[in-house]
Each structure stands twice: as structure tokens, then as C-alpha cells.
View 1 (cartoon, rainbow, N blue to C red):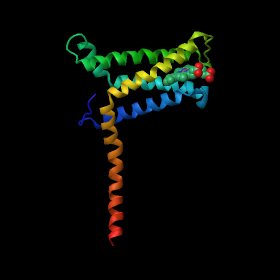
View 2: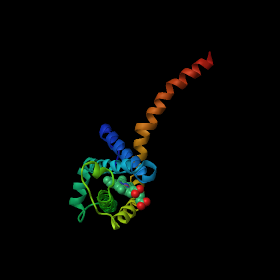
View 3: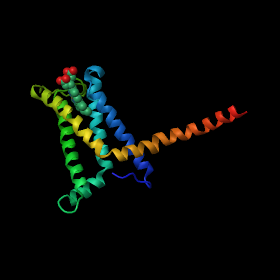
View 4: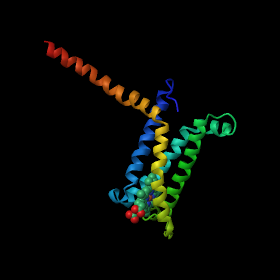
Length: 173
Ligand code: HEM
């Protein structure tokens, strides 16, 4: 995806949602560290963040779906297939998570007595997410680097520039 100069707010929203997804995934990968209740609610919030991510990129999704077998660029096709795999994988992670839920669903008054192989499916699909998201990040690396430069590093440098100027003025006196 290209960084749009005319849509700074849209880009900032995308960056914030993507960072939230990334952090939620890192914490969700360590249920023993967070505790099972935090793990489950965070996993559900992760699902909502993924839906938001999809809605924010809906235009791209519709366009590539329409042109997939005709004039879509090869890179867009690779991206599309990878995104479809990620979507299936995330759906399986959350679906299997709900089926083995011990905290979130019982808290809502729902009981699921399903366990067995869903636990294995949950773990396998969560592990599969790692290489898939690694490729997804690699394919969007240029956009990620541009956004960090624009919304993180440039403002930090801007904040520090007057301080540096003030301290070098003091030194000169
Ligand atoms: C970002 C989404 C999620 C990721 C990456 C994820 C990942 C994991 C991983 C890696 C484990 C450890 C598996 C093992 O050692 O056997 C686990 C366990 C578990 N997950 Fe998830 N999960 C996610 C979402 C969910 C959701 C939405 C629920 C339920 C609402 C859920 C419920 C559980 C339960 C009950 C366990 C077993 C915990 C235990 O017995 O200590 N997970 N998950």
C-alpha cells in the first residue's frame, strides 16, 4: 500500500490499528504470562481490531477482488492470497479459542463443553499466524517505515530540535 500524502489522518488511524493488532497478538501468544481471562478478552478484541483493519482496507479488497483474474498486478495477487490465508487463519484461531473458552464465554453465561482437538487447532493456527504475519509485514515494509518516519520519528526530532538549539545557544554564552 502506498503512503498517501493527502490522507494523513487515515494513515495515522491505519498505523494505530496495526500497532494495536501487533501488540495484542504478542500478548495473546503468551497466555501463561497474561492469565487465561486476559488472554481470552484480548483475543476477542484482537478479532474486532482485525475486522476494523479489513474495513479500513475495504476499497483495496473490492478492487483486487474485481480485477484478480484480469488485470491485477502480480504483487497485488500475491498480497491478496496471503491476506486470504491470514483471514482464514485468524477466523480459525478465534473460533477454536471460543470453543475452548474457560473465562470469557462462561462470564457471559455461555458454556461450551467442546475441547479435545480444538485446543490443538487453536495452538497450531496461532503458531501458523507468525510466518504469515511476517510475510505480510515484509510486503508492507515500505509503508510501515514511511509511517513511522512521518508520525513517530519526525515529530520526536521536531520536539528535540528547539531543545538542542536552546542548549547550544546556552553553551555559546
Ligand atoms: C489473537 C488471538 C489469539 C492467539 C494468538 C491465541 C494464542 C494462544 C496460544 C499460543 C495458546 C497456548 C496453546 C497451548 O500452549 O496449548 C492459547 C491457549 C488458549 N487460548 Fe488462545 N489465542 C487467541 C485467542 C483466543 C480467544 C479469542 C480465546 C477464547 C475466547 C482463547 C482461548 C484460549 C484458551 C482457553 C487457551 C488455553 C489456556 C490454558 O489452558 O492455559 N484464545 N491461545
